[in-house]
Amino acid sequence: MMNKIILRRGKEESLNRFHPWIFSGAIHHTEITPREGEAGSASLEEGDIVEVLASDGRFLAIGHWQIGSIAVRVLTFKRQPINQAFWQKRLAAALDVRCAIGVAEMENGKWSNGKYNDIFRLVHGEGDNLPGLVIDIYGSTAVMQAHSVGMHVCRMEIAEALKAVMGDSLKSIYYKSETTLPFKAQLGQENCFLYGETGDDIARENGLKFHIDWLKGQKTGFFVDQRDNRALVEHYAKGRRVLNMFCYTGGFSVYAMRGGAELVHSVDSSAKAIELVDANVEMNFPRDNRHEAFAEDAFKFMENSLFSDSLEPRRSFNERSTFHSSPKYDLIILDPPAFAKHKDALHNALRGYTKLNAKAFEMIQPGGILFTFSCSQAVNKDQFRTAVFTAAAMARRKVRILHQLHQPADHPINIYHPEGEYLKGLVLYVE
Ligand code: SAH
Image 1 (cartoon, rainbow, N blue to C red):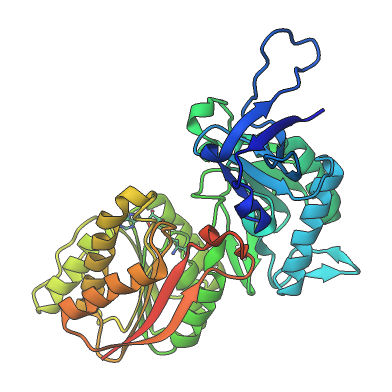
Image 2 (image 1 turned 180 degrees about the horizontal axis):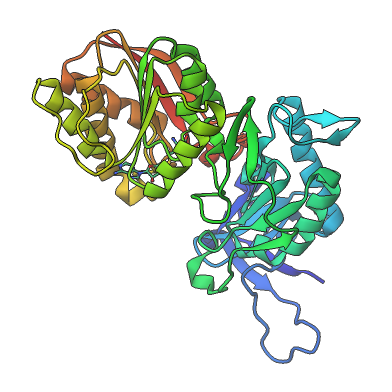
């Protein structure tokens, strides 16, 4: 017998439209079946699987119960058991989508890694009808991340299902949920392998090779969501002097080099990231002196570049970047971390985007191209565009929008869950 959640009258509306969240305010009461051997007043535990019913008792959905304003994350709108077979079906459906969009390569009906592209997101939470779960594939390693206690409870079943769906080409599953599980749940979960162990850390994206640090790297180890946008940078890079701000592992830099950039500068405040950029550039373009990386704060770097534009000698700001002539960049990429993690940080975030973009507009050469991004879910497309518009006006540059960018197809947005849209970008031509 499954625990039941009965909604208040009229609160089933959003579920009839397949929205996958139930807010705590929509709940009328819960009916709890005591666990075996449990006496007295039983209660729901975070992560429990619950059945959701309308006020008239009609079945609506099954989902994971959690503490907080989102009380249930819906797994299915059908009455069916949530077991390994269920996960397997969902993961197989996710893999089908990745084959359809051409990011997962198949051989004799089985997934095969190690050719042109073996980096992709297999599961993107609600976008794959698996709220609270993210799975990224890097060559023969899958990195799995739970954002809900419910997914955490089911992790072994999901790992088994993943092995069955991906086949022999998958050699290990790393579970990286230490920082993504609700802090208050106090699960004390450490990152660990659920299957296999660290193997080859090199994977391929569009024929370019990358070291992926799933053990210590940010997110699941790589920013899979910029694949298509990196390819567009490659398209525009020929003969240009490129500045890749917030470069992390240097994805945009490596594509710019393949595109024939005259020079590429990569900047990130993390020294570890700069080590990874250098290693990735060296692996794809050995002994190519078009590239240089700087472990520096973005704002400082840009201010110093502007400063040296005025023909004064460039100051050295750390041991790495000692005096060098200041290049005139004509392709700049700004891909900062999320400035607004929550709605209440929105105002400051928008000011941050304006300030950052204004600096880029000040320094970019006439005829230059600016790729500018926001990955804050709390900032919508229009707000971001307004922030960039304000920046252009501040710098008094004439600017045209060439492309409007977003997250790629392996980060699908469930049409009933528009909250899943987070990455937005603009490609601008600056006179
Ligand atoms: N463009 C990258 C992803 C960027 S993630 C890619 O395609 O993979 C954001 C990066 O910004 C992180 O690597 C972080 O270390 C860096 N960062 C954060 N604050 C910074 C700052 N003030 N100056 C420079 N880099 C910063």
